[in-house]
Length: 320
Image 1 (cartoon, rainbow, N blue to C red):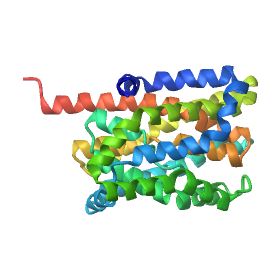
Image 2: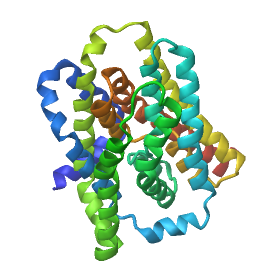
Image 3: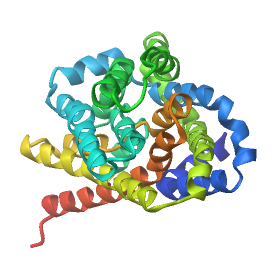
Image 4: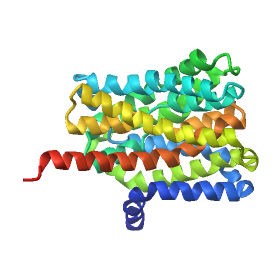
């Protein structure tokens, strides 16, 4: 177990490199890695459960007593960013609506559990971050299918009932179970359990990313100008989320911990859930962007956290 804890400490700052590595492995060995695809849902359930331990209803209610940071993040996540994705996608891909759907699907996905890691590293509000993730997770079976139907219902037929069912299985039920355990066993016990399961959760995330990218191999074999544009827009949307979250935090004059948390959470998405849903319900074109997004999401968030830390250090310790 000590080995796994050392692995967790080693892996946390290297997640962008590790995600890039597993993406390459999945692309180079699609037939072998593709054997993991049937187990992606189970890995998603475990990852959600492991990362939701330690968060309970009292924490959520306490944060919601000052709802402005939560509402700012949720509006950015599920109103501003999906509309931006729809507008940019429609402009850049008038003849490839599935690429637009791919971008919108990412922006409609729930907040990323991995954003908690960057909130901790950057000195953000862990309680706020957990509450955003928990609330967005619970709302995801309603928000994600509804967003896709409103914005992309004319692009492709949507199995909303199937997506709601899968989101309940992959995301909501494991998170609810973790909350119940937190209530029964106590927050301290569950927090210790979360730390124990954290390295296994990272391994699950890497396996999910590696398995989902195998579905994009046929597309990458015929890489063309439009796919390069889609890659660029995938990066752009991650940066745009950070910028929007930061500007709104400055506008509302959030304290640094809330500013850090809102900024990071406004960009990071549960790409694993988005890619898994895309693989189950849509053509390969839709899977592409959610599958490569984790690499850019981790990289851009790490750079943003460092920039915010340096700015705050200058404020706290101005040069004399």
